[in-house]
Amino acid sequence: MTQIEFLFFGPPRFRVNGAAVKINRRKAVALAVFLAVTARPHSREKLAAMFWPESDGPRSRASLRKALWLITKVLGKTWLNIDRETISFVPHEDLEVDVNRFLKLTAVLSRNKLREEPDSPKHSKTDPIDSGQPATDRARPEQIKALEEAAQIHKASFLSGFFLNHAPDFEDWQTEQAQRLDRLAANVLESLTRSG
Image (tube, rainbow, N blue to C red; front, side, top):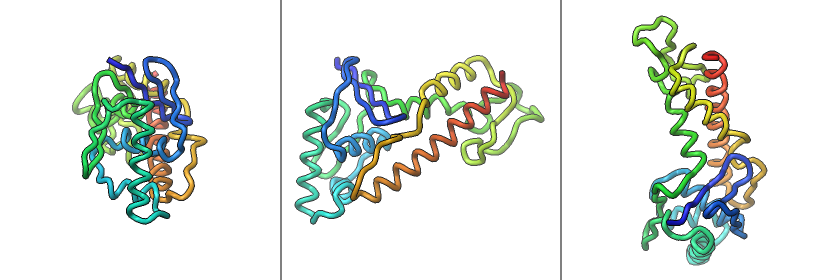
């Protein structure tokens, strides 16, 4: 089966079977990013309005169809479920999205997961993702390994250097995601520093 990699820390990049591939339209790239990172169904109407707000209904839906054609031409269809009403991301074992891997690895930062002892007085009861505070001073070796891998993945901000004109809803979403992921990366580094 075809191996597909989505690399979104830094400028967006795609690989198929280890080889870099390029999607030639910025809005098609942004659409692929949005579908892969949100990993849930979206209505065609919502996507058309989000990425082509300057166009009327029929034109924006035609632009969406063209973008989907470009995406599937380059990346194939195995990672998408496309029907008449919705479009959604379909995860599978031959597909890696760096943002989703990062989030999975950083789940050890969630409340109560890093502590070694359930009643440790050093354990912070605040959620490190929301507060910016590490959950504990100590972590188990498998948790440290997960955080080290997460730190390796987050080499640059989400979609740094990538800009999309005339799609303010996407731009807002991109900014929010970048800020959230950067905060989480700072928490990862803080937790590694404290456990080292």
